[in-house]
Image (cartoon, rainbow, N blue to C red; front, top):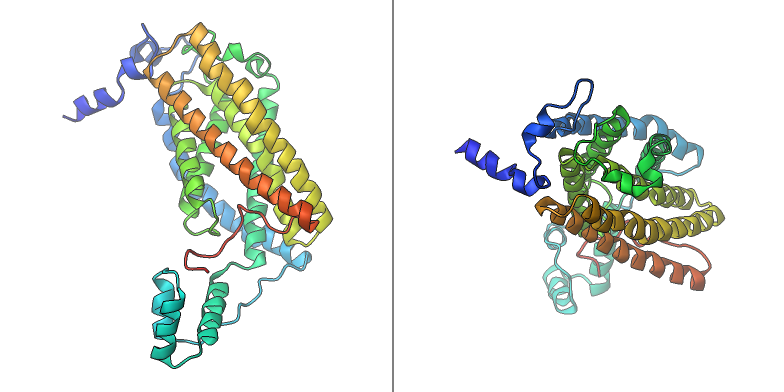
Amino acid sequence: MTSSISAWIWSERFWLPENVSWADLEHPPPGVEYPRMGHTLYALPLAVGVFLLRLIFERLVAKPCAHILQIQAGVSRQAQPNAVLEKVYQSKLCTDTRQLEGLSKQLDWDVRKIQRWFRIRRNQDRPSMQTKFCESMWRFTFYLGIFIYAIRHLWVSPWMWDTRQCWHNYPFQPVIPGQFNYYVAELAFYWSLMFSQFTDIKRKDFIIMLVHHLVAIILITFSYANNMLRAGTLVMCVHDASDIFLEAAKLANYAKYQRLCDGLFVVFSISFFLTRLVIFPFWIVYSVLFESWEIIGPYQAWWMFNGLLLVLQTLHIIWFYLITRIAIKAIFKGKVSKDDRSDIDSSSDE
């Protein structure tokens, strides 16, 4: 039973081009290593290590930096204990006028006093500026480090300059240490984000980010098992590039360096547009869709990978819409006052 399910999941007709079998990949020439699905399991314990490293980094590096920049944790004003209002607050229901009036009669409180209680209670749950600074500093450090590593590896790789090289002799392309390290590090990072997203600052695009992380993990895992490493490294590098400037802009905003924040946000917007709305669709997706079709031909997993890449591109368009909204606000307000992807109130907010 188990063997039949495994055979169905790893069907050669689904995962591999015509006339290629798993046996062909299991016996590479001497001195050559092909990717194996089991290699991706290294990312799971490494994800725990990445999460623990993040906690250490935030405590020993980010928090002292926040103190130097005088970004304080801040103690929120505590709401007056009230079991009835707390139950309503925890239910995450939107408090309309009718419900407020009912609570006013039940507690013998003025409606404005109840509204003020909910406002204080919401603020009590919001993360401090220091917490947000530490989170962004960790992400900035990771994106910058992994991007530098990727560029060093890709700069001397022929497929960076000629994407048709991604498909020559596919899938009999040996995995090199730089590719393996990059893939495992990125996969571990995304797994750690999947876990930490439920404890990190809540954002307007929580569901979008959840979908993004799932798609990223699936793409990274199965592109490795399917030996699409060359195209995969290009996809990941393009995604990391603009995130560096986003997190840098947030750091400047939390430190109240407004002009630096505005400048970095402009750089982020330009880099996001160029990498995710120009380079990604017209260079990488084009190669995966059309150049691979021409060189190796389509097969079942080919359709799945291209579908996931198009899902990512749809998310890029949604995010660029949010970025454009911030830019329009900045034009009228004279500054980037808030990241639309940044922290927001809970669903019970007015």
